[in-house]
Image (tube, rainbow, N blue to C red; front, side, top):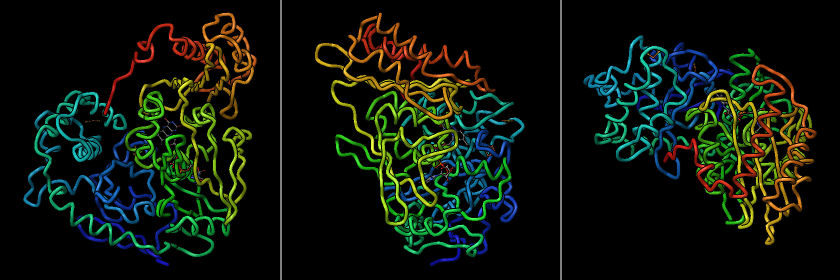
Length: 490
Ligand SMILES: Cc1cc2nc3c(=O)[nH]c(=O)nc-3n(C[C@H](O)[C@H](O)[C@H](O)COP(=O)(O)OP(=O)(O)OC[C@H]3O[C@@H](n4cnc5c(N)ncnc54)[C@H](O)[C@@H]3O)c2cc1C
Ligand code: FES
Ligand code: FES
């Protein structure tokens, strides 16, 4: 058992004792360490001013990911390297290529957003090869807001920096850093605090399940992209926190060819290529979910366990007929994901029970899948309405099974069973069946008005999304319909 949190800063190990469960990385950097280059803007993961780079070993190689320090717990960086804007320049003061390019292209005016942009660009610099495209850069910086310079000079700076050789001091010492990270990846359970107030990070899934069973009143934290805001916005004092991040294998992803198993600890960034391989619409959905920073730590498991009616992945997983796997102590069980969402804020999960994984059947050759997210902003926004559709088409062209699920239409993400019924057995191109399904969809849901969308808007949007899915599934307007609005990004 270890009673400290350890990570790497500036090539050296930092070891902290007495870390408060809800201590945030941003506060540690600014207040304790005095590294005030990292800024605080929104404190809710939206503006990117607090972006730092987190170095981790991924498949044995050092990888840098951008993270919002304002909603990261200090405990979450155990075993990682933390890089801030202060660390980028060379010892003799020579600016890092991304910093130099920002100067060259006048990428900064008031400068408040600049450290966050620089850190996002630093991770872009380390994660791509060859010339990057404007779309790639736009995607990468979708989680960084600038209200005075404008984005064009920043995108130009990114393209200039990435056009050069990518051999900065971090690349040169990558082997040493990887060695240090391997040293930090011990098999000790981490437990900082006492039985009444602690932050813990068990090193194994068995340890995780046992500790949660023992402390069912604890808060499980994976990416903290939801829980972080409970602390920074709702000012909740979470006395007991159990992190899933160190539990070996909890982020495992396995593809059998027929099914995809996503460990509950897998981040969106880890899951993205696997989900994209099931269907391009899934790749597009993940690309628009939060930002690079959110996807670097946020998990599909957290999205499901959270049970939000407007989470993006639950409608998709319901339409795909996924199964959730749960574990309490040594006891394991599983259920169809649609039975997991009981009511607003209520999931079919016992106290002390972990979500351990999500099993997703892959599409059969006769199945057509579509999903669409409608939100006020294209990037980095929660859905107003989210629709997901899976049609199984029989040899005679009829719909053997329709699975239709929506988010943002009820207290939980759920299926449109009346609309499904109206389509089942009908020919895919039968416009009378479509009309029956549109009418049935209005019976399926009575959405609410809220600040995101009115009930009428939600109803009309759901109707339009079902229409789009049917048009595309029927092949009426060719695959062009599907590709409109999509920028293919590596
Ligand atoms: C800026 C920003 C943008 C966002 N954009 C989107 C968006 O576009 N679409 C969207 O759907 N969401 C969005 N979110 C919400 C959030 O990113 C997702 O819900 C994310 O999937 C949560 O995962 P996490 O690992 O961070 O969960 P955490 O915050 O760690 O946990 C979330 C909840 O799940 C529980 N939990 C986590 N893992 C487990 C487990 N294994 N077993 C049991 N309980 C568990 C926690 O106790 C908590 O109740 C956004 C958040 C931010 C800050
Ligand atoms: S301060 Fe805005 S994302 Fe962290
Ligand atoms: S330079 Fe002022 S907010 Fe970006």
